[in-house]
Length: 110
Length: 119
Image (tube, rainbow over the protein chains, first blue to last red):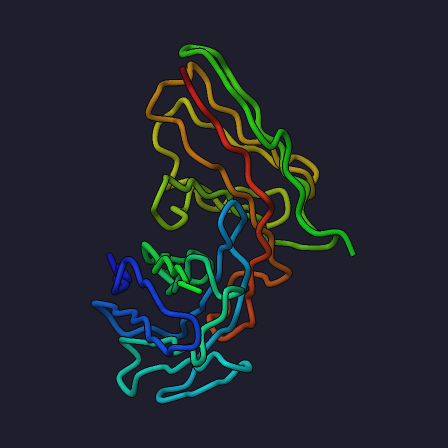
């Protein structure tokens, strides 16, 4: 079945720097969702992308869906300590079931 | 408004004990999901309910796992004869969407999870 793979697994960032995390699927996705899980917390929905080539921004976060709808990226600019956590992408396996990636865990050096 | 709640937040069980984990979804949410999350991994699908109907239980690891949602609101995940490999965080999520439309805005709202430790 379809799996989503995320790279890198860990991202250590200096405060103020930018970074990008990537999500890749072996099959074409109808949509992709991104979630953030703070340390000790639970996943919180960030965004859903549906259209080929779609780009959405949330303040310092920029989400992109690939033209072929097989990959996605999350770019964070000017990283802050509030960005600490694990970012998951999730692709649908069917009408309701999501396949989550293993996540990118972000730590920030002040 | 109230989010998804789960209880207990932490559960320690001796191997062989039965446990019951409760999930209170957001009122009015049709869809309810249970996930298992191992340390350092993403949530893994266990089962899906649409109202009171369990439409998919393909992710349940064994027949020791059982889930129900008898009145279409509160759900319970029961694990019989717990084993050490059952130790994980069990997450419940609900969604107002009804399955049947991949284009539907089907954001899932997660509860805080129950951390199960089997000794």
